[in-house]
Length: 170
Length: 171
Image 1 (spheres, each protein chain N blue to C red):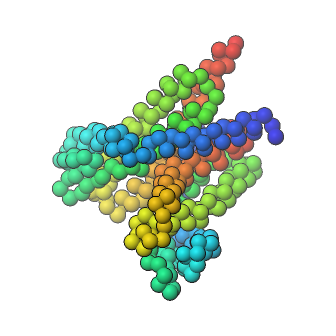
Image 2: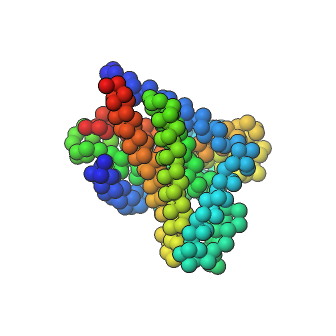
Image 3: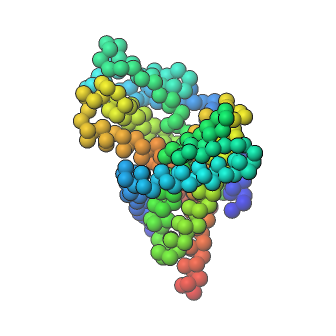
């Protein structure tokens, strides 16, 4: 086994363990009630505000964004937390300084959640004007796009971290 | 980075179209592969799993448990990300990348019957009256946690891990 393969397998093992650990942190009912649902509500407020700016005339109640003919509910799996968990696990598993990791997690999670607001807004618009396409976009397209964005942000962060480390060694 | 993103988008679009097209085939394959696995659980010894379009049905010919249906495409759409990530690799058509992709595809396809098995067990354990008499609280919670973990982070985490360790990812 080459050193590179060994490093990669070590990374994947750490990543899998941390994925389970971070998932276990965000799953319990008290965390869901006090952190995740208020966060989903905040996403609903921001997304609802953007939809109103776009002339959609929606109301926000809890995690539900409702118009006259269509409504979306921001449930777990639609709030981007799963991508945040993924980013935290991947960046924590990758060999880097803690300051690089924290900065990377903060920046990447902000971008992913920004993208998630676009997902919510677009899904509302698709659901209202093209309901037949809602299922495919909700399930396959946007879920994959959010995770793809998380993967690309992680890859971009690793190349930046490698360059910084190389410069520090010189 | 930009050529990689362009290749990724091309792979993503093609993979989405192909996935929509082959979803019924994936559902049939999953149903056939999951049925013998489900028979290991004595409560489902006579279970029959069939697929119609992208929906999988679990039936009890002797009425020993209630019937259920599940949209199996919810368990297979991680294939889109798998194809797109391997398409984003430099020179995606060369042999080494194709081989790594096929190995990763085999791993992900092998995981799908397990995911369907967990989904079926979760449904009966946590969402049916029949399950209340058949599963203990711990078992019901374990199935639910496993199912949610796979659906929310595991199915994409597995795809990412396969792509990350592939030797064709960097050059």
